[in-house]
Length: 294
Image (cartoon, rainbow, N blue to C red; front, side, top):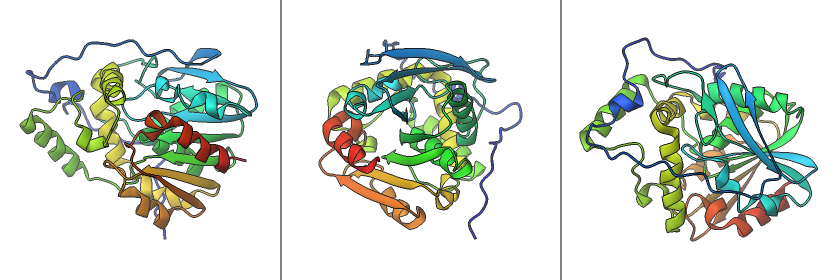
């Protein structure tokens, strides 16, 4: 029997370290870089109980909501959005604490995928969307999968692009990750191409800039991804799903997980590309998504 995933995430009591406190004092301070402009013809901000969510859109018709990666922003979709917008409305949302979205209070120790999901649904409700397609890269894909599992009447299809399909990481192991990161002198904005397999330098540079915009919320959300046990949601998804992976980087191992846990799955591998294939190879990625969507 598949365990029932929690609807709401948990936070630790006072006194636990925030991501800012966990970052070594000697870590470099990353300069804030403006978000690159995109092809959007509409834009707005929606207030939720936890903050404001920024959204952009292009096109008209059947809505497809796009959610970016951990440490990303809506500009991640700017190259592929026009290719997907010929017969549908593309709506990209800055995830909570990302891009131009803002949170009301300070970062907690942990922010889970269900917490992110509920804020997204609140904003989508304000947009008047009752049913829609959803697609996401990395963290955005996990949030989309959670929405599809818990609110099946709302989601027409799900597209996951390089998503970390992982089970639950224990609190003890998450705390040990923090210790290991401090011991290695790692800061949240410094990345290696060996982790994500990016092959286009501009994508790597932009990712560093978009992660810097998240600031002290980055590590709490990363902790929440580990705690949320996204794999418990996957077997509950009733709609058709598309899983796009590449043959490089840290996400390749999740193709087998998707095939094992997702009931109605179409899986496609795009070779010779980095993990963020929608940014590196937008035309090929759009062709696959357009073929999959009704």
